[in-house]
Length: 130
Image (cartoon, rainbow, N blue to C red; front, side):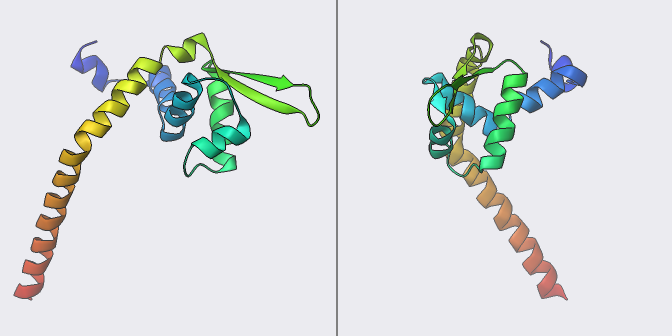
């Protein structure tokens, strides 16, 4: 895919990327790549996710065919989530993104600090001139 095509991601392709590569979806898929999980276990594994956000993310991923939901007929009834074959195709890109984020984080933090320092200096300069 050319850079031009990538810059024009619109319509259904943009929607699919938005729905499968948001922060919670990536986390859910990464956990499910390791094996099936129940709702409570997913929530415990994913730091900071609320019950509402997890429910919405699971529904969206199931609707898009990335995961399977199975009701376990027990007392009490339980629900298990498992990655689908289609969802499994995202494992390598998600792993690559996680590795990139780990490797790039020091440089990104340095860039943020430099930017913040420039902004602070500009504010101080304007304040000093006033």
